[in-house]
Length: 294
Image 1 (cartoon, rainbow, N blue to C red):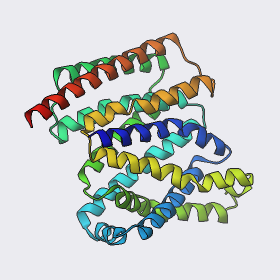
Image 2 (cartoon, one colour):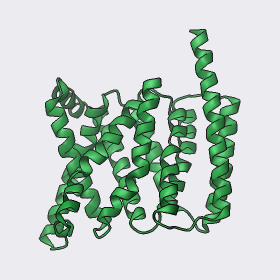
Image 3 (cartoon, rainbow, N blue to C red):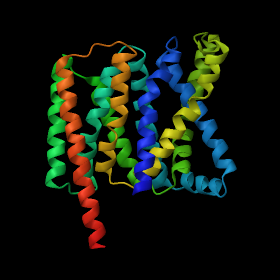
């Protein structure tokens, strides 16, 4: 469990810093950035699969099993949609709304865990959910309009987390399958842009273009860490650790990207951080009780 916690923390720190990375490609359309992200993620994962001992056999087993392939296809479409909305929002001045979306996600995770995984939160954990819900409600009201970006990000990533709990393959094999599933679509879109003379990536400065090629590693590594964490932690706990990512993103939105941050948002995030503290202590208590029982 401690190892899973470490993977989760480093994954969410990396995701929290991603807006800085995607801002480098602000001159490109979100669809073009996403396509490059998928293509170079596939290339990165293909290298890992062929270099890893026994990985190719596992990958073949994954793509020849109909049930598993359907799950991988579902997770691939969910995470691709999440990526597209996130990239568009970051490069169109909605970084705070992406932060709010990932603050909402743990509420989706707990709901899904109760409905589909039969996890039973304790009273203190439910208190944490209530505090987080109040914080999210205040932030939504303060935002002033229906937060479709936030809700889409929360919904797609919450469902992605649930599907990952259903897949038994290791992190590298699962991610290779996810990127392989959407690779043909991404490649076809890049070819279309090139044929229509609408592609803009090749006009980027050389260093920025190299950074775009490295989007595969920047995408794959946090997902690999997340997949390892998802296999070792309860979904509800994984959801609350996720607050690390949007907190970093929130700080970036205010102090780096200069987006508006009102006093009401400060109150809402105070509720959310209180929820995180309550949930952390409640989870530690549950883990200690389980250790004593064992």
